[in-house]
Length: 172
Length: 282
Image 1 (cartoon, one colour):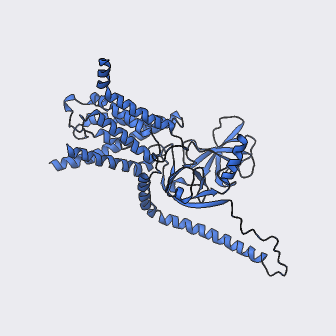
Image 2 (cartoon, chains in turn orange, purple):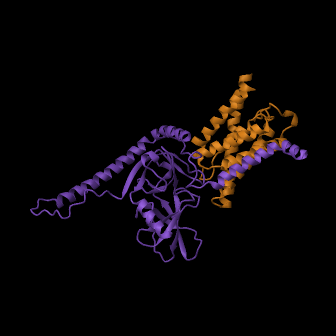
Image 3 (cartoon, rainbow over the protein chains, first blue to last red):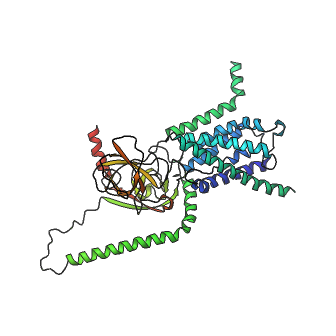
C-alpha cells in the first residue's frame, strides 16, 4: 500500500513535468495539444478514498496552472472530473472489481477504453470552455476539443500499454 | 438539526468538491493580468527554476541558428558603422573654422534604454499565451514596460518577481496596441484573434485607407512603445465587423516559434508622462 502512494507521487511529478515542459509546447496544426496529466486520475486504485481523489485532482490542476499561467482553469476542470470519477466508473466497471484494482488497457481493455474516452472528453470540454471565457469562438473551440481529445486519448493508451506491459513482464 | 448534520456528514465529500471548484473559478475570474500575485504564475522561483534549466538545454540546440542571426546582425551594424564613419570623416574633414556652438550635450541621456533578457518559457499552444523572461525587478524591470525583439514588437510586461518577469505577447487576446500603416497617419488597433500565431489583425482603419500587400505596420501613439517600431506586414484584408472600417491580417515581424532573446524598453519619462496625464483626468 505504501509503495502505491510513493508510486503515485512519482507519477504525479513526472506527469506535471512532462505536460508543462514538453506537451504544452506542442500544437499540432495549431489546434491539437496533447493533455496527458489526467492519466494520474485514471490510474488511481478504483476504491481509493473520495477525498484523496478530489484533493489530488485539485492539486494536480493547480500545479499545472501555476506553470502555465492560467490560474484556476485546469484546477476547476480537473476537480470536476475527479468528483465525477466514481460515477463514470460505475457506468463501465463491475462493482466487485473495486478496492485496490488499478484499471489498465491489458487488465480491463473494454471498460478502461470507454472510461478513458469519457473522462478525457469531459475534461477537455470543460477546460476549453472555461478557457474560452476570454475569447469566444464556438467553432474553433469545438474543433480544438475534438482534435486534442483524439491525440490525448491515443497518447494515454500508448503510455498505458507501455507501462502495463513492463509491469506484467516483471510479474511473470 | 440532527438530520441536517447527518446530511452534511453524508455528503461532505461533495461539499469539499464544490468548495474546491468554487475556489478554482474564483481564481479564474479574479485572474487579472495586472494585479494577480506572483506566486501562482510562472514567475515564481520554483517554476522559474524549472523553465530556466530546461531552456538552458533547449537553447544549446538553437546555438547555431542564434549564431547565424548574430553574425547577420553584426554585419548589418558593421555596415552602418562604416556608413557613419564615412559621414563623420566628411563632416570633420580638416576645416579651419570649427563650429563649437552645435556641440552635442554630453549630459543628456536618451529617452529609451534597453535591458536585454532571455526567454525562458513561451507558450503558444493555447489561447492564454505568455512569455517568461529571466530578468526581474532586480534588473530594473517593472510592469507595463514594452518588450521587443530584433525584428519587432513582442509584448508588454505584466508581472515581475525578483528574477523573472511574465510578458503578455501580441499573440494573447488581452493585448491591444494602436498601430498605423507606414504611409499614412490614420491609426487602428492591433489584436490577435486566437488563430495562427504568425498573424495578428489590424482593426478599425478607415475604409478609404489605401494599402498594398506587404505594407509595413508600425506602432502609433503608445505610452509603452516608442513610435514607429515595426509590428508586421499586411498580408490581406480580413473579416471586418463594421462596414466603415477595414480589418487587415498582419504577418507579425517577430517569429514566436524561435524567439530567444528580447529587449525590454525602459522609458525614462514614463512616470513623468503618466503623472501628468493623471492630473488631467482628476
